[in-house]
Structure formats: C-alpha cells, structure tokens
Image (tube, rainbow, N blue to C red; front, side, top):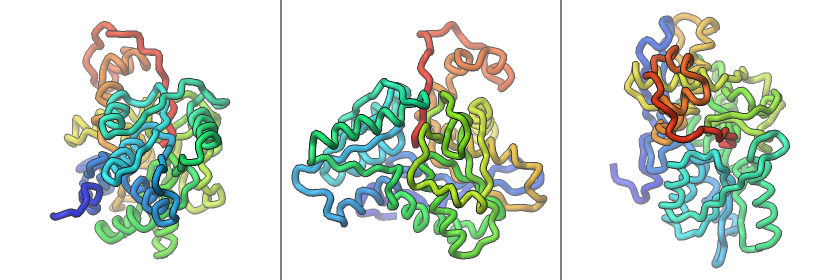
Length: 341
C-alpha cells in the first residue's frame, strides 16, 4: 500500500481469531495498534486536529494542549510533528515511562502534574492545570478529548464502519471505555444500521464513568476519575456494562501472549477479561469481536514485569498466573496509576 501520510498507514480491517479462547464461540480481536502511533488513539487525534483546523482554531502562533495518560499523547505528538504544530501534553507520574519518552521524542512538551484530585486520581488535576494555562495564554487551544464530538465521530465513521465492512455484524461486541469515544461511536453506528449486536462497554474497577465508586488504579488505559462529557448515561439501556478488576486484566494479557503470541496492552487485557467473564451468557456458535486498542510494548515494565506484578499483587498472585519467582525488587514500587484514556 502507498500512503500520502504516515498517519494514514495501517490496516483498518485487521481481525485476528483467538482459537479456543471460548470453547463454544468464535472470538476475534480487531487490532487497532497497527499504525505509527501504536494505538486506536490515532483516530481520535487525527479527527480532533482536523476538526480544529477546519473550524479555524489553529493559526500562526497557536500551541495545542491536551491531557493524556499515554496513548493519545503519543498520537497527538506524532500528528502535530507532521503538521508543524507545537503541542503541550499534560500527564501524571503514573504514565508509562516509555510513553513519555515517545511523546518527547516526537517533539512534544510534556508536563507531569503530581497532585491528586478529589477522586484520588490525576485527571481532575491535569484538567485544572490546563484551565490555568488557557486563562493565561490566549494562543493555547485545548482539543479536549473528553468533550470533543470529533472523538465520537472518529469511531462512528471509522472503527464501527470498519467492523461492519470488514468483519460483518458480530453477535457480540466488546469495547473498552476510557473517554467513551469508541463506545459512543459504535453505539451510534450499530443503532443506525439497526444491528442486533449485543454491545458491552468494559471499564476498570475504580473508574467512575459507570457510576461506581472511585478507587486508585495501577494500569494506565481504561477508566476515569471523572465522567467524560461525551459519555451519555441515557444510552445505558442499549448496552451491557462491565467493570473488570485489574488482576484479571493482567491475567488476560499474559495468557494472550503465552497462548496466542500476541503482546496486548492493558486495555486490551481488560476487554478480553470481560469476554471470558461473559462466556456463560454468550450462546454457542456466536461470533464475538473484541476491539483491541493498544499494544503491549508500553506495559513491558509493568503488566509483563514479574517484579512489578509481585510488588503490587504479591508473589502468590504471580505464581498463580504462571510467572517466574520475582527477583529482589530493583527499586521500591509505590506509584499507582490513574488512567484517563
């Protein structure tokens, strides 16, 4: 394939069957990390920047600013580098080190906010920092992935259409929830075509989006310590909601790597854990599709690192999931991660 831009590169119709994942139903992954940014966030990033251009919000002297826990920041840094826009990315101490390295390597200015918000996360503090910067500098433009309709449109006209065109209409669809852009976009498209698909939104225990209590989380990716504006609570009757404990996501990541040869990210592991937990509800012969938003490279120092897992969940948990006995800790592991993707 020939592409005019690196950000157009990738296979939008990459579906991989996970043989034997469910004994009674076909399980497939839609791989969304097959692009230069390495995650599904390239779609929202491209859509939001393009929408800002078309609205005349970007001009000489403009600097973009955005809050990110990792993947959106990498995608925005990549696109802004290619289009010549300076960008400031506001993250927190729990962003994966490799992700922060990538953002900076792509030319972004990265600010790390270390004050927790009222829900013991960092998202509220990141947004507060952006609000202060916007008040002080009129040249700043906040894309605001949490409230930007272009985020939803990117998945309504992109991800969801790719599914029905490239895979067909699945019987069951599992989608991770961070900003909720992917879920909202899929709901709109599947309602538009009147598909009978059972859609499941998957979030992490400790996220408040579905109305549950806030709690600290360790794995960047899904979840939020504040409800995104684009998330519509009134849509609840149109899909199932599941909250997945983080240990289950770790198990799913590692088993997928060991059994299927796929190094998936923490968000993908969370979605796959939800698929497995729903096995008793899925009728025999169903075609099940899970959207895989991320790759596992950014999680090599956490989810796939025995020392990190043992430090946070104990050596017994590590032994239960087939890990190697943990060596002595290299450094104390105390950081806990709040995700806002």
